[in-house]
Image (cartoon, rainbow, N blue to C red):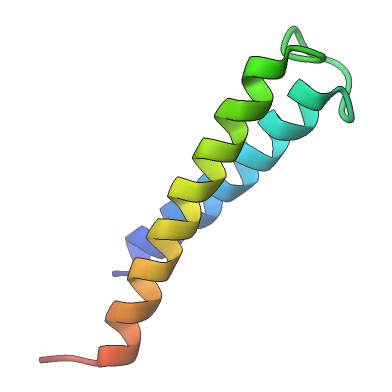
Length: 64
C-alpha cells in the first residue's frame, strides 16, 4: 500500500518538473519550451494522483 503512495508522489513531482520545463517556466534542459512535455507531465501527474488516491482508499478501509 505505501509503495503505491510513494510511487504516486514521485510521479507527481516528476510530472510537475516536466510540466514546468515544457511550458518554459523551468529552464536548463533539452525539454525546455517543448509543449509535448507539458502534456506528458500533466498525464504523469494524473497517474500519480490516481496512485495516491488508491493508496489512501486502501489505507482508510483498514486491514481485512
